[in-house]
Length: 421
Picture 1 (cartoon, rainbow, N blue to C red):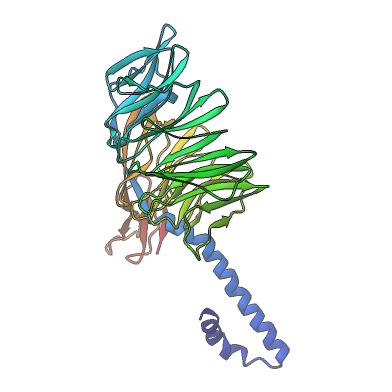
Picture 2 (spheres, rainbow, N blue to C red; picture 1 turned 45 degrees about the vertical axis):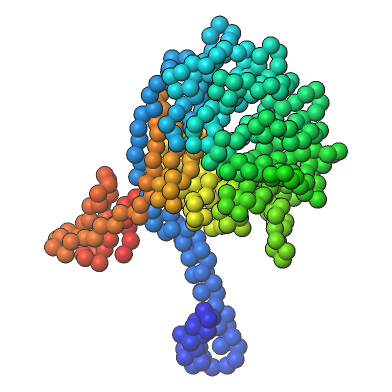
């Protein structure tokens, strides 16, 4: 359709040229001009799209934390951002403080997580030389040489974790043992707590394993490495990233007949992975050179030094993630960035609160922790009034001033400031 339209606009002029060779050269030049214009639009388009929204940040200071001896890497925030848990060290002993309530002392405290709806906190603790899972004030009967991963259902009180006994790894769900393997990594749980998935080692290969109620399935293909596992929050499908040789792929374990099960990627490594509610689109962190970027349904995002948590909106239309450049962390929604922070607190997002209009996260700004709500709004647009003699337009943001062209000129203010008409 495009080339037909280009031919209609150029045809009358080119036909006037004498000789077939002259007309051929003219057609070639005309098409090259349009190809160049299309390439320019491909480059400028994402920049224009990035200007179409801005993040309005609403912050609230998190209180109740003892800031004097706090290791921020050991602070965890509940999903609703209302409760904090942090590890406090005293005389060689460690204890978890949940809100303002100190728990019992242990020799060492490991992974910490909140259960769904932020009702309880669960954590790994070493007692008398063995590791146990502590839920509230109750210790698990199962004891291990190590406990490495703990995951919870976002909308349930189910808990899954991995423990090691000598050279064997055990996967536990609540108080039941799901299996025993040579190695276990990348534990994941569906929001309702019904599905547990993980990478298990058999021989020299890694396989993805999926447990549902009363049923288990190990994927038929093994890989040299599995990088991340994700569970679709609605369709319950499992996807994972895998490497065979030097090539990284995304594997949809529950792909239906006729769908692409394995999707190749051009990246050197793939980290975090999320599936959208439909289970067909995915977002993931990938490296090219020494820089990380998030790849989603709309293509690649800008490169960063590090990528943190990634999340889709409930309708799958937007994607958000945390990213570090140098010493500064930001939250990104599609291509729009927040202001900078020292760190995004553990368990503190970012995540969409409802639909695709609000993103919640917890962050450290200066020496103070904050709950942050990023409200996604269209970028402000201000039209120059007709009676403005100078034609200058001043937008609502400081420093926004555009040389106007009367009433036809507009100034767009937002995270990416610029003029348009």
